[in-house]
Length: 314
Image (cartoon, rainbow, N blue to C red):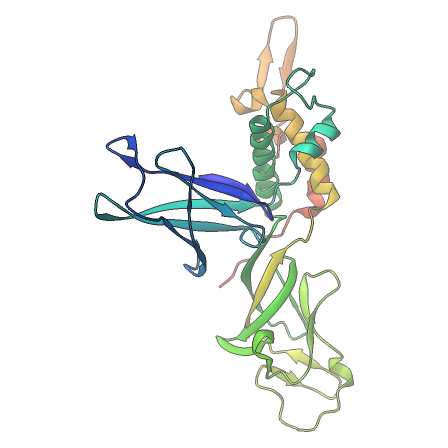
């Protein structure tokens, strides 16, 4: 599966084979781009037939296609030997925690093949992906950004606390009923709602200062003489963009440490499940945390403040 960086341009190639021989389609090749998780259509286009390259077609993903982390589905539709063909391909859009340029600069690596400590781009990309997976697994978080929703239950306060940080929101449901939709200019709350300063929750704006015109509280809330609060045990589903506008500097620093380990095989013993080495003259024993954490104690210390607390959703 191909992985492309968030907000990047990327060419996706198709090679049409007829009995293992590259062959042009009978006519044009149409590309349908979809969100693989929702099956929602994003756009369609005609693929470009690469000149002087039999059976080779290309399609360009643009920054609007890759603006958020998601799984893309590309469907190539064409006719070959009078037979209709639909060929599918999945593309993973992800936010790298460090770009190749940042890695080269931070770790003092060579920029050209003739330089000392030079690593090919593919090696840097693989090391970053492994570091990113380790960080996500250790913290229980993803530091990219994606469209989606979060479920949270009212706790009798004027704020709903999210499991994950949100960049923005556009719709709120309460027990499967739409109560707020900014795209439709729809709001049955009767007051404004906004993300908290930390973006870790949704709060009622000036709920205690409202001029109440009706003694009947809105169905999503209960009211007392002091303030409005989200109703206890009501399930609120908040839609929007989840994650971070940029990768936190601490996450980048942890990524650099782990990338360095992968490039120089500093984690090789751990990868082979070796916890003790005895040469007769010298003995090494690794901590148990080497197998439960990222394998880098400094990286673990940096990431500890970002670890999420598990929340059970009923």
